[in-house]
Length: 150
Image (cartoon, rainbow, N blue to C red; front, top):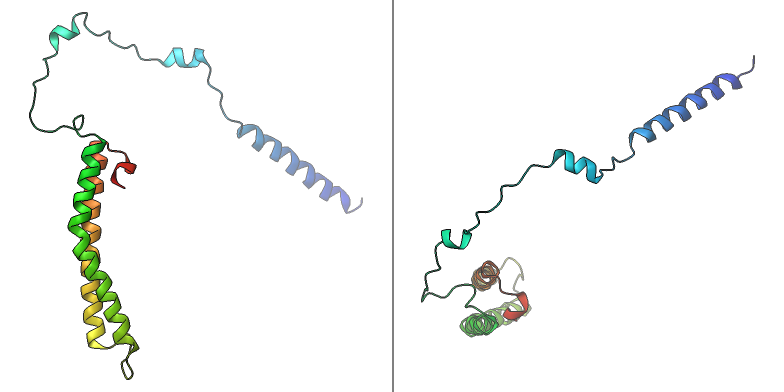
């Protein structure tokens, strides 16, 4: 007998095993009959559902239905105007940091004044981000579209 017979036998076993594995991996197809068989019956709503549910109470507080695009654009502009001084201070701090780092004899990243200005800069940027995030989160919860805040 030659050496090829064990190799051929092994190849045949591998091919048969692969075919069996592929047959197991075919996805199950669900039909309407399958869904009807496992469906849970739904209870019918009462005939006079309008009479059972309480009537809405008019409210003077603004609701998400009352808050339209104009409200969110105005709110975004109000927050933008409130944050403008902070953004100006951020820009001036960045310029101060850059100027201090450019001075001769100053270690640009370990100088105490530079590090203090960087900490202040990071705190201001965090306050700006937090205010913007609060506006975006309240708008998202109220169902406002993102374009209304731009």
